[in-house]
Length: 346
Image 1 (cartoon, rainbow, N blue to C red):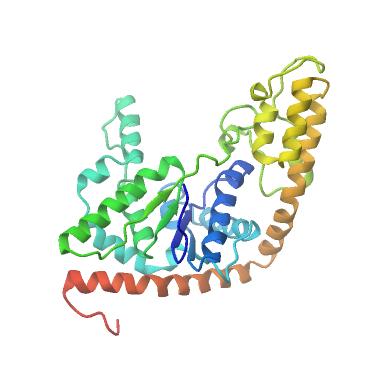
Image 2 (cartoon, one colour):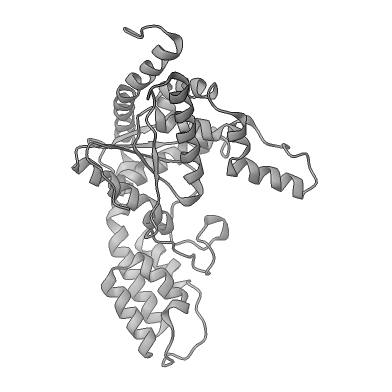
């Protein structure tokens, strides 16, 4: 899809949970940052935030929450977010979002929330276990799409890059904004559009399953060269003879390599497998060195940000100020119409 980015606003949020791996990097982090650079180059705005309020549903230990938020902030900066250009902030530092959430609840049909994938999945899981359908489900989970809608609408976002599992939330956001606009007969809130990419790399884990920390099958993003080499050398292989001609698409090593290695390396591996004669050990070494070369600068930058986290916190606070300056006019305009009063001086 060809996007018109000139003077547009692109917004991305990331929950501070889990451990980052190269699947996250190539599948979400790098594409989001590249898109941010593209919209900035076209005179638009790139808004990126750490969604700590969203994470409360999954992470209620405050110490872990702080650690995860710090890790995510340092990682995204290390991966190329430029806080002097991108509006980079922590969700909880922008109160306008939560005021917007309260307003939006009054325009959101309950049916919108009933059909949300996360809620339906939780209900189905309960029913499968013979439990009441809403057992263990709190309003944070149920109202998750409204908070996400506020994240998007408060800044007048045009585009929201998301995984396919999050497209529904952007569609719900558009429906809520449409309900508001229809109620007052004018465009008060901008209708956002989800961005997904069919070209985004889907990288399997070292055992062939989905790459996930819970499976212990990841190649870490923030890691030393030795840790990366160890993870790559642990990629599952078969027992075919080294000289056997192989179909690269059926070989896990190749499936991972084409998502993380430069094209020249990928083509060399493909030819070696197709013609035979290239051993899996050789391929693993090629892959490991390629990944280390790509990620070493990120690792070094991350260590620098972690060692000087007070500077990172200053960046986040400055980002929050810029985010609030962008959010305030949108919220004030909405409130002025809903409450029929001027917001001047507020």
